[in-house]
Length: 349
Image (cartoon, rainbow, N blue to C red; front, side, top):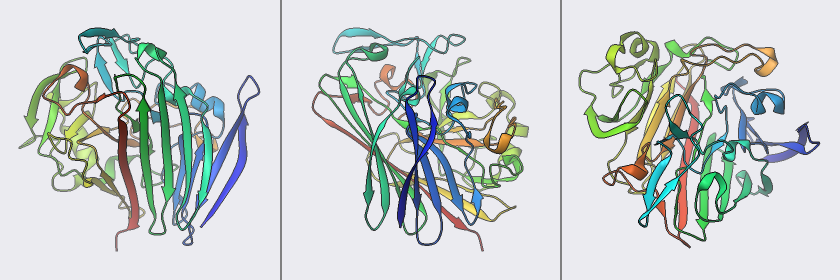
């Protein structure tokens, strides 16, 4: 195992953005940068399966796609940017104005921060990114200490460990917004990828992609991925199931938050034979199919359009703060928030 730190780029104000490279004995490589705690690349058998940019300006000026970034304090949407906590109405910034909601932490979420970092060069190499989110940031209560650790194991697993603690009662729902393409970031779009999700339900959403509070059975729906099928097959059949124009749905892995590690999804590229298995302790999995991707300055100068990558965002359910029967996202003062997600890569024989 090895770890390397390089200068990736500089911010417009001169602050340095570093790139941390983790490599295991089999030659699998994961890189991350200090801006946004972004997962920049995941190279397996010579194929990079993550979308990204070659400069920090790409991440700063991305078209709202949050490529590769650590997301917080609250991933996904909060209706109207409001919720009640301890009898008080909390009003957050609504940065997705078209839908009137708070999305992925607001105007300046964790994806727009320059994180500190430390290294751990043990049997499995890892980097821990740290951040302090002050009381009142984006109108969230409590000063929060956050850690996100990326570990590359010897068996080609990228593990993400999230940790947070706050000095006041608050809410939290962290995730990562990596865009995967097992065909390779410079390969064909993902429609031919075979996707399996062991979920019986999704959380129903309205026209603004806000949960209604109901659970919808996937029996007979185009979003039933309990048996692996090409992602494009679902795209073509969505009809009334389309969310925002494509797949942008929270799949219910469990109606409770047990904290147990479960398989959330598997995706296989027929082109490369690369299989990515997503495992998580979270109760939900947001699949975003990349139908709105429009990037002009991707890696190696590529222009990425629709379906060039898709997201497997492990999470609590969207708008959980306004649905008491959803797994809670409340973090009490002094309590620890702990969440783990793994992406294991292998080849299909």
